[in-house]
Amino acid sequence: MLTLMSMRTDPEIALSFKLRPIDDIAGELGIASERLIHYGRHIAKVDSKLLEELKGRPDGKLILVTAMSPTPAGEGKTTLTIGLTQSLKLLGRKAAACLRQPSLGPFFGAKGGATGGGLSQVLPADDITLQFTGDDYSIVTAHNLISSVIDNHMYHATLPIDPARILWPRASTVNDRTLRKLRVPVGKAGGGRDEEFVISAASEMMSILSLSLSLTDFRERAGRVVVAFCKDGKPVTIADLGVTGAAAALFKNAIHPNLVQSNEGAPVFIHGGPFGNISIGCNSLLATKLALKLSDYVLTEAGFATELGAEKFFDIKCRCGDLKPSAAVIVATLKALRLHGGSKDYLKTDTASMVRGLENLEKHIENIKKFGVPSIVAVNRYHDDTEEELSALLGALGERGVSAHVVDVRERGGAGGVEAAGALLALSENHPNFKYLYQLNIPVAEKINIVAREMYGALDVEFTGEAKRDIEEIGSFGYSTLPVCVAKTPKSLSDDPDLLGRPLGFKVSVRRVKIDAGAGFLVAVCGNVLLMPGLPKHPLAEEIDIDGDGKVTGF
Image (cartoon, rainbow, N blue to C red):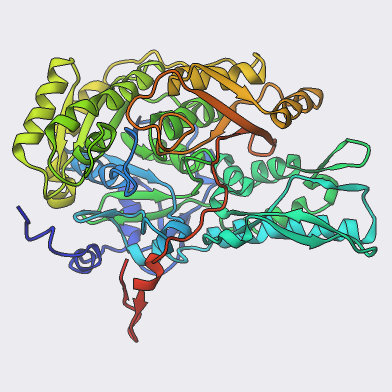
């Protein structure tokens, strides 16, 4: 049954709310106005140096929001992260949410924005999704500055860079399949080399921003980035190019976390935006640690499902920042369960397929248990979900001993998630035996094998000749102790997007292993995953417009 709320668009709902001055939101967290860098009345950056001043204060409880394997539209992790933060606020708790900045690629492409929905949005949604505070500008400009300097060194022959071994691509904020492979000239003598673009969310600059705790930390990390190899086989870093300072200078303001608010006035930090399928899929470590000092409870989401965003959150972000998560929320929907249960039309009620799809959800529950973190399942309710199918789902999960709760924060705001929030409060009072999936001192190939076997359920991992050479070179240059970030399809637990449900007996293929020394991890590229997405036949950009008063419509 359609409700009044579900018949209104997200922009219409957003316009019906009167936003509070951002100083008021900051003040409730204990942030003084002089610590804010204002971008209008409702958006501000928080001085990153505040974290150092608060280092003696105890941390609040950290709760991760992750999901089962998704449908093409996603299952609503961002909406639930915002909504459950509002629920905790209704229960009298001091809570904040930490989210990634939306990417313009999906916004203009197929998925739309990533600011939540209905009565669980972050506002002002159009400003957040579009230019926001310019952080993405810093990412792309710094990234392409480095590309330009690499080519300039080859033009003037000031560094003996091997044109066949340039690791650093160029970057763009929007999807453009034409830029995946192209040819560019090399030096004064002519000739050419292969070049590619990645979307800004896949840039190592984005990963560095997401893991740096200060501008000094950012500068040091940026200097370590390996961008190419010399003709004698030695690595070339940004420090070798001589532009570490210039690249870091572009992050003078971007390093500071952004603060906005939800429909119901809950504080939301939005900072960093790496994708979960091709990067670490988490918001900035700086924003998370700052929120933990200022709040009793912090909810943060990680991109896509447990085998991607959650695994990287635990094994990379938590390891880097010494974070100790207290609980996790696994988002499930009837639509995703039907899809992974083999339904021919997962948008229609199909209880039999929904029950079969529980195999996929069960795997994700098992994945979270491997890290020693307690979890609940939050069933994100859509307006066309039936009571009968929801009851069947809760019954089936109850029989399996799973704590599950229907959450309706899109239609009801914080009130629609109070039951689940209460369960999270109870869970977070425990002291989980949090642990990483692997240790850093084991071989690179074994780390990848452990992730594939434990998280995906793979039988084995096959490495191409190029990937084997990459791993050998990684060892020779002393990078073997870095954690691994697997880039693969989010559509399946495997690296094959067509293997839905809970596939068994499959192997994962690793094409190459990249060194992201500045970010502090290795990237294993699996299957046919793309680092530069394309646009659909009719991209959402065709629907977006703006009137003379600056009102954006169509998203």
